[in-house]
Structures are given as C-alpha cells and as structure tokens.
Amino acid sequence: MSAADMRKTGLEEPKQLTVGFVGAGGIAKTRHLPNLARIPDVHVLAVANRTRESGERVAEEFGIPKVYDDWRAVIERRDVDIVFIGTWPVMHREVSLAALEAGKHVFCQARMAMNLREARDMLEAARARPDLVSMVCPPPHRMPFEPAIRDLLASDRMGRITSIQLESFSGNNLDRSHITWREDAYLSGLQALALGIYGETLNAWLGPYRSLTASMSTPVSEKMGPDGSMVAVGIPQLVSVSGTLESGAVASELHSGVAADRSTPRQRLTVWGLNGTMAYDFAAKALSFAPAGEQLAPVEVPEDRRNPWRVEEEFIEAVRTARRGERWRVSPDFGEGLEYMRKVEAVHEAARTGRAVSPAEL
Image (tube, rainbow, N blue to C red; front, top):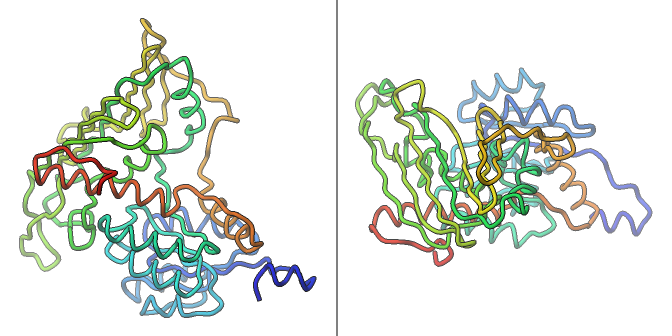
C-alpha cells in the first residue's frame, strides 16, 4: 500500500526505512554507514561486497544482519527500501537500473557512470520512477562553504565573472608498485583523476562549458598488476582543459596525478570578476576574497552560510518526502550527474580529436 493510500485509509505511514549496500568500501565505512546509524528509524539490513570476507568484516563492524555473495540478492529483498551503491563505476549503471526497476530508492557513489551513454540510461530509468529518489553522492569539495561561495559569486562584490582557473594537483599516480581501480579503464571508464568530481562542483557554482578543448597524457604508462606482471595504465594522469563557460567566462583547468614534489600539490579554484577576485582552497577549506586593486584576504564564513556534510540525512529526508507522495529534491540528482558526465565525455572527445567540443551537443 502506498503512502497516499495509507493517508486515505487513515493508517499511519511506517517510519522505518531499510537499507541495503551493494559495495561498502572506504567512504561507506567512514561516512555513509556511521551517519545512517545516527538517523532514527533507519536500519541497514544487508550488504554484498566484492568478496564474502570483506562483506563479513563490514557487517561485523556495523552490525549488518545479512551478508550476500551476489548483489542481486540485496535488491531482491522485499524489505529493503533503499539501495546504496558503493561499487566501482563499472557496476553503477547495472545496479542502479536493477534497483529502480525493483522499486528501490537509489544512492549512487560519485563518479556517476563509466560514460555519458550509461549516465543517460540511469537518468531515463530514474525519470520513469519519479516516485523514487535517485541521487549521486556529492563531492566533499562543495562543502562546507557552498552557500557563502554562491552568494559571493552572484554578488556585485565580484561583478561579472571574466575567468576561472582550477588547479588539481597530487602525486597519487606516481606509485608504480601496483595499479588501482582509478587507473583501470575497465573499472572506471572515462573517469580521470578528479575531473568529474570538480566538473560537478563547477557546474553547480559557475555553470557548464559552452565549448572546450583538452589534452591528456599518461607519463607512468605501466604499473604492476595483481598477478605481478606489468599492465598498461588506461586512465590519463594529466588532463588540461580550456574553453568558455556558457556565462562567457574563460576557463582553464589542469589536473595532475604526477606532481612529484611536496610544494605543488593543491586543490584550488580562482575566480576573477570585474570587481573582485575569489580563491578557494578545497584541501584547506579556506575562502579568500580581494576587491579590485587589493590583496586576497581570508573570509570568515558565518555559520548560517555554511553547508556541513549532511548528505545521508538529506537523502533520507528526501525519501521520506517521496513516501508521503510529495515532491522531493536532492543535489546532485541523476540529472545533475548526467551534466557532469557530458563534460567528462566532452573532454575525452576533445583530446581524441584535437577539436573544440560543445558538451551540450553530445
């Protein structure tokens, strides 16, 4: 019986929500599972991991009653209302489609899909079930100062935005001793470095690209595979993007996983306007601003303009809203996820062809 039918008959809508995990790795253990445990009337009933052993370890740590070898068994449980997908991107489409078809609300880890085609399939399935909440995990980059940053970017203090520069540097790809899933195109598809995650953030704050060009390279071309042999790295370790946003602002991005020194690694966005400049250090969570003609100085963000991590709570609130038959809202939903997948696809297409690409035309 639906929530609407229950209201008609005077029956009270059940408060309890039950969750099943398909893939419970790092972020599930550090964020999702502990935070879900703090929400009243939310219970995690089942988990299916890549191996039985890892699933049993997670279940023991977080008190999950049932461990499955096959992820489909989680979705087939009639008493599971919500499916959290924490697998590698290679499974996001298949699990999302199966969960939505089974009538489950879906929370999908970031790096929405392998490519734009898969993201389209996921969005089509979500739109076919508007009564179900479908959400992509937002990047922590958008927190905790997003409200203040949006205010500043839209204000006369910045004026018209003329240009932006994003720097995303790390040494994460320098280790040759083993290849990770983030370097395996079979598991990650077109995802490269933090390109998609920052793409979602830039779309939310500054809007999408009108047109872009790109170049890529893989300086560390081979790494040791699981069997000890050397295997080709299938994911770019350097990505350069430049172009024009739909707002008219000129944009430049450089993503690197092969910064060998200790000084260069940083995650920084700089935005120049006619009246002022904003800089945000994602790693240090430090916001700075300079009016025209002055030096950048730290900005103290008041509590009411902060947005702390409430991802799980906001998702559950949306599910409860949907259960009442009311309109729900989460960010990013599958539609927003599709938009950053357009950018990811456009960057690869531009690098492959050497031509400018408009994401909106893909």
